[in-house]
Length: 153
Figure 1: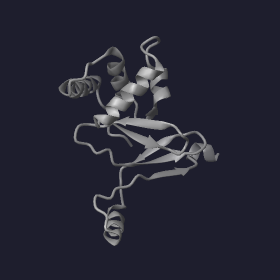
Figure 2: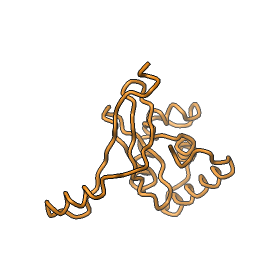
Figure 3: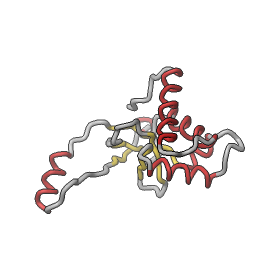
Figure 4: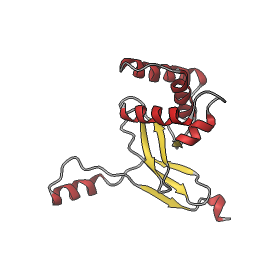
């Protein structure tokens, strides 16, 4: 599951303060919408679409375009990671400082439940593929899809 579960409200507040400091440290303002987006991402255990984030915003907090722009900025700064679950919607997950965000997901094709898979067994395969083809710095993205136990009933 996710590393963010089980955090106390004070720990979450402290981490939000750290995230805001990261924005400030790169000469970016902490606007109301950006602060709200960070709070939403911090509180949610799985990747969210920009529309999901917009729906969770306080009414009148900002428009959808502001969410899209903010997500682009946060991705560019390495504060969020983008995921593609094959449905045409980009999803974003908050990254802690120093976290490369490398993990995989198991996604239910019926209800869209997401389970995070922390193990990665592909490092040796990456090395072999790189070596055989003369590549360096090979990485991968891998998502698994299936039916969750609830949807199997």
